Amino acid sequence: MKANASGLLRAKKHIIAVARYLHEQGYLLRTWGNVSCRIDDDTFLITPSGIRYDDLTPDMIVKVRIDDLHYKGRYAPSFERGVHAACYRARRDVNFVVLTHQVFASCVGVLGLKKIYTYVDDEDIVIPCVPYAYPGSTKLEGNVFATIKKYKDYNSFILSNHGALFVGADSDVVLDEIETTEIACDNFLVDVCKTDMYHGVEEGYGSHIKGDQIIYDIPDTPERVKHIHREIYERRPDVRYIVHNKSEAVMTVSRTATQLRPLLFDFAEIIGYDVKIPSNEHGKDGHSYHNIHKNSNAVFSLNDGAYCVGETLEDAVAASIVLDKGCIAYLAALRHGESHPLSIMDCMKMNRYYRKSYAKLASDVWD
Ligand SMILES: [Zn+2]
Image (tube, rainbow, N blue to C red; front, side):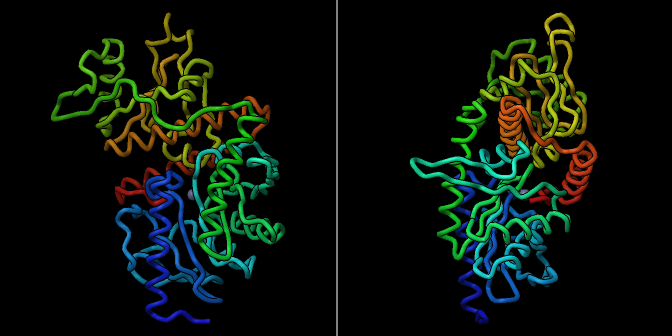
């Protein structure tokens, strides 16, 4: 089977429509996650690397060869193209693939489990987990290939320490799986991990830089908070926006933990690998110490959530969302009693690579 030009254009438009829908539903954030479809035995179409879903046009959707990942043109296919190719190689019945960083499925993927046994309504659901390997590595492609092939009757998979992977005969099957899996994983977190937390940003005191002034979102921001904001702007000249996240998960971590180890890939990239939380030992009320440094985009305050920072408001909001997900994962792992954290070496590599690419292109390269 070979797709003609109008068929190709239709397929590209369909990929964009699916990606935008998932973005609106909150399953895809910024440029993270990717969508692909098979066009014939040898090739598939996939979303490009580092372009926001709102900006996508059909000419940016890239045609990639399944066997050697070869592609042509000025747009680079998603960084995770190897994972998609592995799915098409492993299973002839697969014509559509989506990789997401959706919240609850990502969180169950840090527990080090081989399968997630859960349910939706009255139906029992089993979700196999693809073992962790460094994102973009051939080892990860191999793990995906083996898992997808082994569980040939399954369409939903957890990508350990990273996100979730969905395959199917068409996009309808995949969209359905994405939704069901998120509910099923939320049920697992509540029932097994005793972690029932909404995901999002609960805004406290925010601010931004205008000229050489700090503009506070709330006029009567307390002096102790202003002090932290001033300190952040002073020590991080690259930061222009601060979003204070006081979500349930971030608040819980800010009063109980002393250190957060990255459990998820996007946490290591955006939030960093050396996140310390002030405790009462730091100064008499804990407020005099804050862990501000260039490799971390979240500054915790004792029992008061975290200040998430960025060069733009969008960056700071993204950091808040990624931090919240990381905190839910941390609490779930703690209550579950076992987890599989990322190695510090991998985290440093992810963080360094992300920063370097981000600075060079001023857009997300990892996706
Ligand atoms: Zn990813």
